[in-house]
Image (cartoon, rainbow, N blue to C red):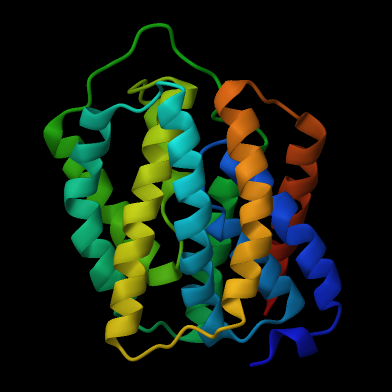
Length: 248
């Protein structure tokens, strides 16, 4: 599929760095946002998953570097989730889902992205709890599987859980989620490639555009960033995509 033949592709290319900016600012790769936009603009379903995972690899890596430099990464918190998420993300990436079912699952997962952008999970707790090993392994496995299955990194689900369960502070959750997204995206993409799925060369054009927004978003997010207007605009786009996916 030639992405440059898609109607209003120029609008998509203008929105892409904005989406990458907003997601990287909170330590995410942005796959749920990319998938939402691809659904709105009519991308071929078989190209959406590998393209979103590829974009995730670059944007999440940028976020991780900036948040780690700022001293927010908690290695122990990351490992307890990643141990089971990586192999199950690979398994999920190897499974081909019917297009109609895929859209419905993606719509449900977009709800997490909408709530995250609206800062529903944004409040920190002064007293933190230590995650139990069995909790981390179980949650990591579940998120990892759906990450590979749908083509997201899973950070949009993990970071709200970390905040709700008081396992870490906001920027700490962002740093852990960034690396969590990267490893799951890599595992899911390898699962796709093992099936013979090929990445279109045009996808790397999208990577270059997304990286521009990702660099700025990660820089400002790791220091101090809170732009409510842009968050609400992105949440609005995700709501539209969620409705479209549900009705089609």
